[in-house]
Image (cartoon, rainbow, N blue to C red; front, top):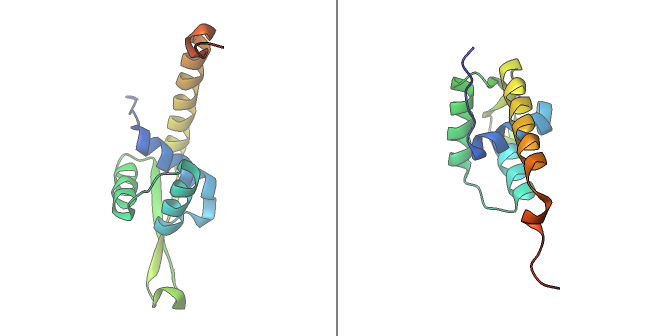
Length: 112
């Protein structure tokens, strides 16, 4: 199988979906991203990324039931697929190998 690479934001979104589990839908994903990263994230950016990850086979989605709090609109819930989990494991392994290969003096602070 050909390896599909994740961009940084795709990786963060995929991780967030995995963290949220059954509560992973557009709004909660956006809020969690902003809370964990400390950066402002547009809902439309998250939505586009979720669609792209689903097209790549890393996520699946299904519509939840209508709720009064959303004016009868339904939420689309996202779940990480086996392919998505494999991609996350591969990214983690690559990052760990790179960090492990980094000479200690590279990150030492200069002075004092």
